[in-house]
Image (cartoon, rainbow, N blue to C red; front, side, top):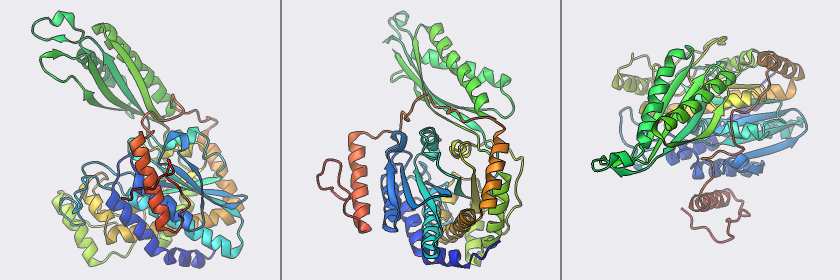
Length: 489
């Protein structure tokens, strides 16, 4: 393994830049598709440090972008995520305490660290490549709506990742390990029924209940569970079931998510669910419509990349946590009724053949280009993501240390891939082996995400955020969409 002292120095120089990004995005805590300030800030930081923003609104996802630096091969990509979750806003204290800002959204999955670590690594790698005359191209992808599982899948289907040789990513967690897991593929369906309204007491026979159709559908879907393979998962949410108890509802809406072991498995069960929706409509003399919000692939492991990124993780992890940080973590564990084991102090060996029930839209990227990530501890052991305790840690010194070390891993791994053609060849060979001859065919039914487009007010707000961020970092050439001055927030 080569000497990584110089790339380490480049990352260290950016520590304040990395943490300022992470802490600002932690404060913004914006939901999927509405990451206006977060997206604008992080693209502006890249522009300030010499990257060109070569794409925006990829596949109709308005808060997405691609930042590019360099020329020629190899082409190494970094993934950025920036959406938060509702109801997880929390102060940086080891108790469930509202955020001082009043923002009820929170980064309980650590996406504020994901973006800053990837961007810090990309800038550090770019700075070293400039100094050393290393040829190659770096691309950084701003990816919206990971929490909605519908961002990178639309971007992948558009072909935006096709020119990459390899793609790197990162994710906070409660352990340190390479993300070499096989995740579940999934699809989200909006199902709507339209019936006929009527007075529920005086003349119910004149109505046709859309709610009854939804009930029949959900009963059928639950009966389907017996015929699902053990790896299958089914979740649903009733979005609309009528407005008044004494009115036959003429409209009902359900969101259903199915997860399966493969894209082909998801296709099969998606078709079955669509048939159930139509069957429920026939039973109630209503009309059904199904909107595929998007489907995502399972994450494809890559043992070669997992081994090399684990070597890098062992250089930078585990972190030497202070006694105060460990006590902070244990206080959270006590509050949540977990064992008081604090923060992780080891790096797990490479995980192979591990199946997980969760899903990620990174899966679609992984079927188009060799992909690997670093999973790193930034919150206490025994606490899965999407909880207030994670939010608290991601906004203070624990998150700062973890995110910086993740940037070191990603920068060093990027440098190795840029300068070791033999490793790159092995990575690509492993990619083809894992694919087993299966080609990527998107699970989406549309070119653009039905939820991804902003309305005029949202788009104007985002344009203002872009303008403000570009001004902040010295680039005032960006103009508001209607060429009028922005009212800065």
